[in-house]
Length: 132
Image 1 (tube, rainbow, N blue to C red):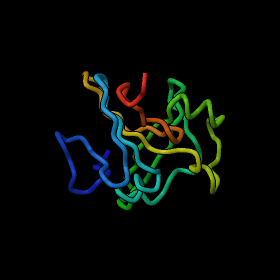
Image 2: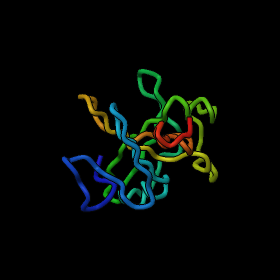
Image 3: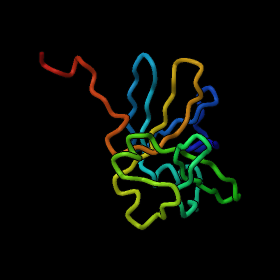
């Protein structure tokens, strides 16, 4: 997938820097952005009108940029469960009201990727925040 923030690449991994929150754990780094920010920053101008499903049963949306290049972004299982999403579900004007984009960077060999999550996903508080 193309770089979501123009001219901002770290080790060939896209990084969202405006209006986002980043959380780092030993296993992964999560960067969040609104769906609108994600689309605007990567020049996406269209979204396929239906939710699609891959051969393994994972649901995704196809985003299309101004050069007519498509990128598939998968929903997290939590997003599917909370929002009752289904294959061939048509998107309506309020579809993204409770969703956000989360960019997941793993510290192991797994490939970094964007995912569509419920709002609030990808933000965590470190244990030191709490008064125990």
